[in-house]
Amino acid sequence: MSGSDYIARLSQALAEAGIRGEPRARIVSEFEDHLASNADADLGDPAQIATQFADELGTDLARRAALRAFGALAFAGSLFAIAFVTGGRVHSFAARGATSALGGLASAVAHNHPSLLTVIALGACLAAVQVSVAAGLAGLLRAIRLRGQPVVATEEAVMLVRRAAVALGSGAVGLLALPLVAATLPQLSGGWKVLAYVVAGVGLVSIAWAVPSVSAALRLKPNVEGRAGDLIDDLDAIVPLRLPGSPWQFAVLLAVGIAMVLTVAGIVQSDPYDGAARGIADGLACLAGFAVLGRYLGLRQGRATE
Amino acid sequence: MTADELKGHLDALILAVLSREPLHGYAVIEALKARSGGKLALPEGTVYPALHRLERSGLLASQWAHDGRRRRVYRVTDRGQRELGLSRSRWREFTTTIEAVLT
Image (cartoon, rainbow over all chains, first blue to last red):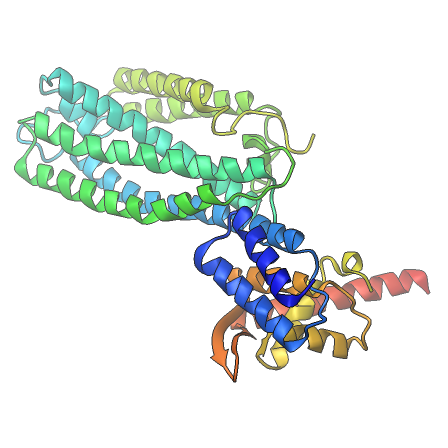
């Protein structure tokens, strides 16, 4: 095969493997230079070279997507938490005990005769943010577990990118719902409403910053057989304790833990019944989320080690 | 020495070669051959994915150079130098252990 034939085949193989644009131009240029230095060089099968590039690049893109999504959400989530917690403190006539177990905004809404739209917006906000936190954390855990591996199975990469996409998408929904709550509840103070709009705007910019990395990872995935692990596989890699054998057992333990923390928070704030009610509701929501999204996000499926 | 036997060591070998001076891809392969007395016989194309991977990991940096031809020149970063030091330590420990058992 002549040098120009080799370069043509390599260029085509790279395109077929999903590597296009500047990365492909750079690879082709380096191989052209190599053949210009030694026309008889043994460069290997172009298809295999292209596959190796694609598998390694796809693995790296998937891992980066999960890490960048988590970084963006950590920043947006911090702003959201400030807005949410202060929501019950600065509204115009905050009821006594408004900042109870679940935090400010929920109590402010509950104590101010909200419209149906406000309740729906708050519900969507709470649900979306919790899904976002769970998916973002799960993506981070998997990225940590797979760190240092030059190539991962397609299923692992798909799950990394899926977790990042769900985390960003639900995070955006949560942020969009925040100004809707602010706009539909007149009793909230003007100052807090401005805060809600600013938090939503800045948070969405942060999420937009992470979207291109997810988009790039969706376009180029490694093409390697193998099973993706589940939540216990992810946790085993970083938690030195002995974990429950099945993801469902872990989910139940987590739900009980959430319920207990919120109940204790209610007791500390002299509102144990409110705390217990919110704790049970949040624990059940956690289990419901696990049932609905657990398989899709790869939290509960066959163990990678089996 | 075949590509299979080199698995797991190629990254460290590339870092070692580039720790002396920045080189382009072809020169890296030539240096690997020269320093191994011609015993490292791997498909030359497999070095390029490794160079790109090491660059993505922050162990190498690269830029285009124009010395008659447009070439991508790689150099080891500070992080790469530290990783090379660790690789050398791990290798010495490994060979010492195996040698103690074999001899």
